[in-house]
Length: 249
Image 1 (spheres, rainbow, N blue to C red):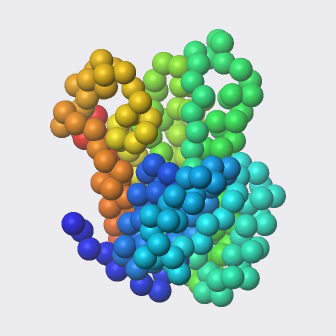
Image 2: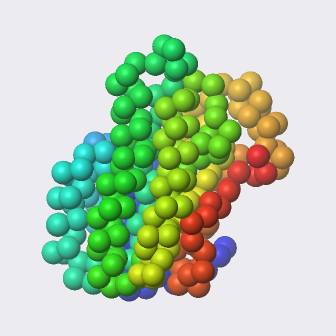
């Protein structure tokens, strides 16, 4: 297992109590970081995450926040500014949703909800995250994107657009904040063995696996390790790029 040391650092992980987000939060906890994990409404999953990581309870801070809501995000950062005098060191924009349909039949609200959560949520969190990090002239921002943003998949025009937008945002923002010691990168997971993949019909699972050159799905911990690497001080010369965790897709 890779060893990281994030003692005395604070990581903010959106959607940090389930799936890939939970794996990222737990990896930071195991590496000694304080973790602020946000969630929207699933109290059961948030409590399960906290219970499973009771050994790190003093370094877990759960916050309810809808990242697509600018005012909620602003209020979150105001609260964190008072609670964390040294600010946050790492922001992981992991929150994301899907509402699939072919474009001609897609409901306008499904388009807007996906784009607002995945892309506008990244904007909202990054804006206030950057302002907090600029004061200390240091920070790491990691945006969790998807190969869908590059390849496009039928029935996922809204999701693909939001994920491609994250990559463009990352490239622009990385140039804006480089002089302040802040790096901004993407991690792009392919087929990862979360609840979403596990619930697929067996024939579809096999079809997807056969598309992956490594012939297996990734696990959330493999994504988390990549996020932690890009969050280290040693990764300070990497910015504006996308690290693919796709098994060779």
